[in-house]
Image (cartoon, rainbow, N blue to C red; front, side, top):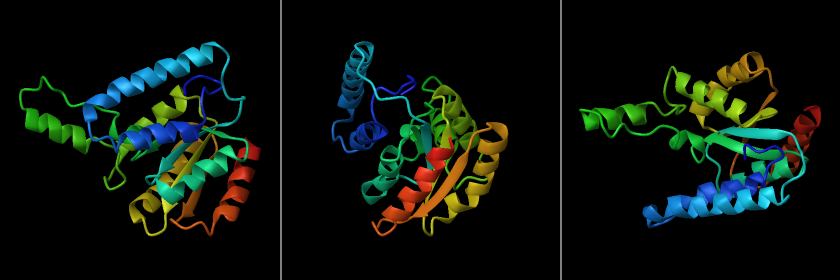
Length: 198
């Protein structure tokens, strides 16, 4: 999704990321993702790609099931989701365990403690990853999705907004939602206005 314009829709990317977490045979995932990537790269070289649209990074709470309405709201209103900085995105796979470490248990602990999870405070690793993703994916705007009563992500919205607006110089919007479909109209209106400003 680093290509501009993007090779596929963000919803397709999400389905691969989310779907891979349900594979029983974990050893197959890497080969399947490599094959899919090669297919997408080949099709991109042949001219199959999305139209140029504002590039959105989704951060915040995990997305799944009914909360896919956030991705739909972005992509149905003129934007394209190019990356995810949440529990179902880059956050959980960004850092590797140092397998050559003298103390492997310490290496495992360091890897897990370095994940930029909102329960950590202070949380510089989340900002560092978010900054890298904004730059690598040429992001035009950041959309943070928080679930009602998810206090750890709600608390971090201010620091994320400041980082995105002041340090990265791009627009940011936070939306709070739940697992129902009752706010789909409101989300579409707010997200459409956000994308229109980009």
